[in-house]
Image (cartoon, rainbow, N blue to C red):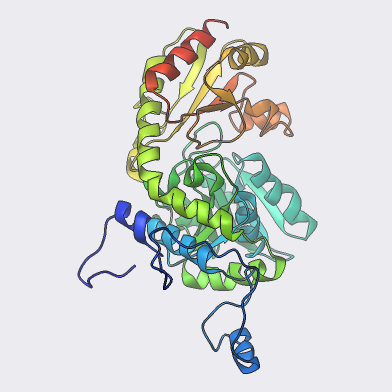
Length: 396
């Protein structure tokens, strides 16, 4: 994006224009480069390209003009020096963690993680000689006690999926750095609009771009962001050699999704706040948790750490699994799905879907009861959503 040297465009403007390099055809929308490989003017040029002595592309598993545009735009939004896109959010989490460690190393992670993220650190990494310790992410002393001489990386998500607990990023980053370790933050629930982990001291941020960044149920994608040094030394070679690459088409879809991200997320958050206030004292709910309410247990930390709330609400229905299922099955507008951040409002029962592989005791540690329902608020009219939720709760 070309601009006068003395102009720093605001976020909404950058999300429309950043990374757009027009071809000689002068297209208004970003070009989509659906190509596996690229040709060279000569054998000498190909050699220089592979030696990184000449700029340009060689293979879309390594880099691609459309993917580059998406990476530049999301990096501008996040305030990161560099970004690398991946085929899915879990590809991003796996690459970010595996790229930082080797046999004999140790990882500390918050135990309240998305089920697949916890599997990476608790099951996958130990297969290759990397030990893991899980802690209550809210307990700063717990992070300190877990540190070993071999500790190389910390991992957390905040707000947590699905219980919406908040972890102090700046404090955990300080503990990690004192131990000579890095901190990776899964920032999906906050979105890059409402929380800036890198500015709070994190070394790496990961997203499932499938969620709010696409936000319209169309494609999978992930992204890893950090300093240029972090991306080049921890991530780039792993991605290049193992190939969890995003397709140019998916990158193009996500690139277009970024253009409307602020409009969608701000509207969804406003509606979520409205629903949370309207339903908070409902007699059929044991508890309602929403990061935008002053009664959230960590409201003071939220005010310091986040510039907005969330599109997500955690509802605990009285009566456990049976009544939670009765509530879910009574919904007519809101659909049951394990996705989130979509234009359509979606609900899921974490204990039997995203976190079903855990024992009841493990789920309890993560704040996941049999009555917990995760609600992702979409773009429908707020009163239509409220009516659907209220009618369904009447069936409980």
